[in-house]
Image (cartoon, rainbow, N blue to C red; front, side, top):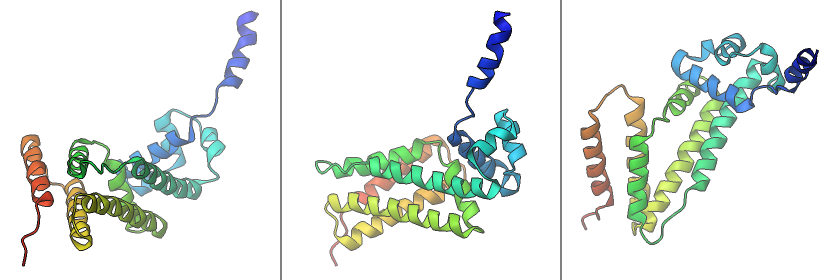
Length: 196
């Protein structure tokens, strides 16, 4: 009798899965299988949940897609806002950015969002916002390192375009060579321009 009375209470106390888990799984599916596979049934199966859990958090698939873009953008903006400038050693901060992007495995959501942005205007605006925020941050690092405005912007864009290009292309580099190129890229970007 005791075990029977506790079963319903256990079932009722179980909360629906966190909204972020649905959004992260949607981005995972977008990356691995494309937009056509972002379906409520597919996500519920992958998360081992019922569709009722989905409707606890989202009105419909369109709400999920829009929320997915917002979630990605907001997470990226929070990450950028959490970064600090090191006035004492901005070159070390630039090196840290290069090292971080070289060794993170967290580029799949970026790739997925860029693919989605090719045919979704809302996603495209979010990607532009993040690209601008990242390059503004990098330009600030180069300004702190003593470069003038145009040099700071040029170097920020060169660094950013290289990083994005590296993880969005299909080229595979030996990890040792990749690290060596990262070191050389840092030295190239931090050196002073020749006077005309």
